[in-house]
Length: 209
Image (cartoon, rainbow, N blue to C red; front, side, top):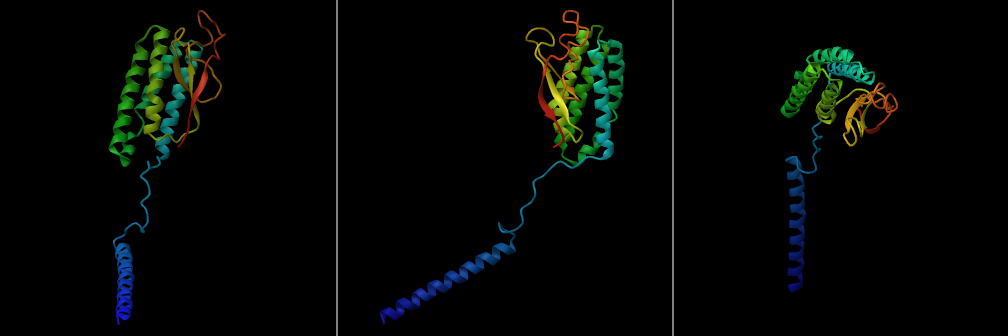
């Protein structure tokens, strides 16, 4: 008799276990629990052709400034910088509001800093001071500006000269070619002439994510 009761008790426990398992399984599925589809991570939206084009023409003006410094042509550097400022104001930054407020505000802040240093370049009479402002424009653009806008253009290069303003006084710039053509020492340096034109190295690659 005790054996029968023990068997019946075991069957009851087994039945309750099976019922409990299926109740949990179906109730979890109904609530969209762990077995449901995972949400994709939030990513920056792709930009319009107009936005990417505005960045491309802006960078072309930047490269014109860089080339002017390679030739130690302060007049050309200033005229290219004026073009750069006009193009900076033409970037359709409102498009970034479709991402997050923090991205939009970061880019607006970057543009303010870039503009401040570019405007300072225009006020300088010394090419050395102009190059210092160019250095600051470059530092604001990379990495903060390019990361914030989720850069989608062609590959560029972040390059460094360890003695741009004297021994141990380095400076960086952006190039559209991997070859080092130094805008701080250039072709007509008062001390080195053109011997330091290719002084420097590629520190990083700027490319679409």
